Image (cartoon, rainbow, N blue to C red; front, side):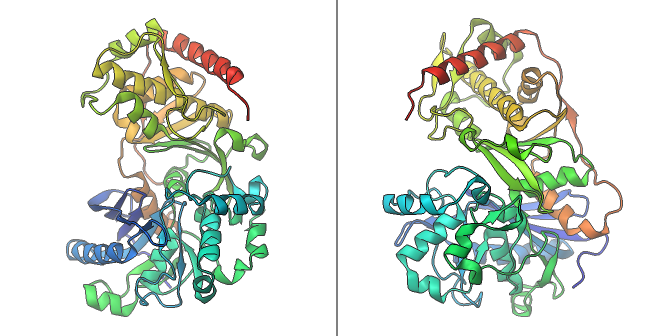
Length: 477
């Protein structure tokens, strides 16, 4: 079917772990209006799960609201890659799910963990190390199979989050490379084939045909359009993984060689120039896929959780002053990784986070230390991805003016720019809808990180040396 017409408005449905957003976005990626709601999670049985029925009601009501104010032509779903939906044959059979969608932060039963580990295959079949909780779509499907084999046998599809919502809206089920390439453990990105576990478990029957993220898989189902006052010809796109769609935003702008670091709960670094041989699963590195199906070197650090642990609950709203951060740097006050339950780039560091040197004395100093620490983590992510001059930072951290300047100071051989657009995923998704029509690079507004005093360069060198010493002293398992 036809996709977007010139000048159209796209509804972007962004399903995050904590929050869900529905935005009206123009063809150049400018957000016109956004609705948001918390992503509801229900306790079991059989496990903690997302309330798909509640989300569907909110989505359709929201689309009806946006359609009254904007000339909607397309619907693009995006979402995180750490969950999927085991679906029935008909999206109107209840919420369409054969079993509740597992919350990936749900603790994993030990017998499932032990039984799954030897089935997971080599690194490129997985795309990552075995991560915390119930992360990984293949592990969730294995858990479902062990817990409720009859429900799995009766299911028709297993769908990533964006493709589930494309199916709900259009009735057409598809697979998509960037979602499967986000540590699903179902897809070998470099070889562009199903992971061995898919064949070993007989899951091929659950995997629908592939579509590109920018492909319109069908129009909206007529009954939905009529019931909710939506255009009968609303194009439903396959959609993709949130970080890969954000990365596509810069690809569409012509920045194909840049390393892109998105910040929030996770610091997510992606680079198309990282050699596959450089990827180290023991240092939080991943093999992702861009929306074209090509490998992206990735690195993950739970920066948002580190920030919260250091800054505390009473962090001031005011930006961190350069003088405050310079004072901490001069006296050698350092936050050492890792405060959360993930090693990330620093094997053996989980739960060992601590402050070294004179502790911060005020909330402003604690916030300054948190910003210093997260900038250092970002620089380490860039170092892991390998050489490459151009860097783009975006997400929640760049709203702190000192953060991009610190990253530039800690990575002096790179050109660091940043985007203050708070809706990068929505912008990338809207650009996807116009992928086939675009003849010029998409517009993107980037700012340049400014210079800082040399005290910060010396501080980074001392911090890295301390991290190396801690790594040598850490107990080995």
